Image 1 (cartoon, rainbow over the protein chains, first blue to last red):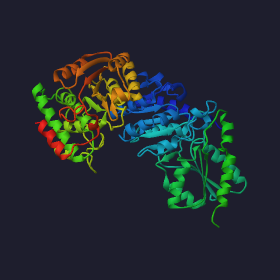
Image 2 (tube, rainbow over the protein chains, first blue to last red):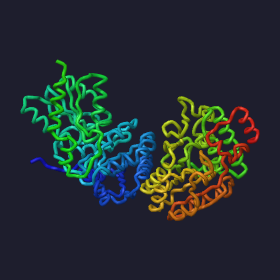
Image 3 (cartoon, each protein chain N blue to C red):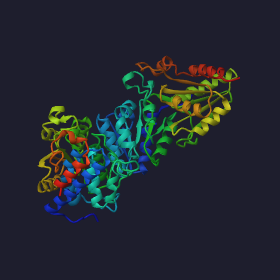
Length: 314
Length: 275
């Protein structure tokens, strides 16, 4: 049985782990520290933890100020508030200034569950990707979350990491490589490439299993960094498979699918199918039920893969 | 390091005239920018940069420097002129304001201009940054101070009050806000458009030590800066009553001069008044 851990839990643990040695790390939260799990850091290092109250715009600006003085601020809230409410502060004060603020937001996607649409952020990848110089990461599991936090500490420039509320299977191993901007090929097959991020990586692997039983060999790429996108790996896989499916827990506009399609259409046009949320808001419900409702399951990926293969030029 | 000689009131006034001349010349040349809001800030900036800030223009990134943030970034012609006169960069650069490739962008850019602490121009965001810098000073046990200049129209932004609340909550006595209260915003008098008054009462109720001064009177300005530095346990706000367009008679208190630049003839009239 695969171990199940929420990426947000790994985040709080990583902050405690790396915060011990690196005293430049400071953490800011907006009254959601128990949910984002930054409270773990706050308990251990109270002097370097700032609860900024329910005021995200000010929190982002405060983090920028700390960063100008050599601190490494990790700023957390739910992704809708961190990236939506404070978007312009991130754009103008953080990114335009080029300061080393790390925005690590939890509760992305419909897998937030019962809280419903107001708290299920399905637009953050798009919001963050459009800002010049921003780096955008969505780890697929708890192990990769720890590595992304570690990699972000000395990374130059602003950075966004997208995490989830619900437990997800641990797919990667401690010794697997993690380099920002370098995709990981999890499985190699020549019939179709499934490019996924976050919680959908697990679904992509399951979809590949199903396809294999039907004689279709799928490559699965864990595109943990959406920006800068690993164009080289993407094109290498696309040239081998001649058809691509993208899979993300996000609206189809501006997320992973858009990023992949943009590169492929300009460099190597081929059939692309996209798994994501099509112009709808989320709603209350258990994550599993919502994954089914919004067509984010392995079965959906399988159907999309067959459609993409069917569109290949003979 | 950073202990620059103090100027008397007369010398400060002479410096201010030089700065105001620069502002008119820069804006006449660039053909776009904000003369009214730049001119209202001049005396506050001159007093700060000549007589208060611990800084070293040759070392803009000196870690122990006092910080200044112009949150009302559209007044940057005034700040650029002060920085140039102070030696952060060549005075001749002022004539490149707002031109393609210039180090002097239309609103402050920390990547191109020495002495700019954070990029800005989008109103409401500077005090939050100042709070972050002040928190860093406390963490590092450093005694540098942080000053943030706000506009009175800028007080309409909700983020100002988020940062006012937080700065008071964290008892940031190393942080000082300076409000350039010139009573006008782009669309008209502040009291008509969206009044933030009574301004002192609001800051008092947010827990700030609140001072009200004439923002063109050097002894009052210096006294307020000193009182802010000596006030412990809470941040200080200096509400400085100013005249928009100060120093150029036909620009003073005229809302149209918020974002309009002088013609060559108007600039000559302004220079004549600023001799």
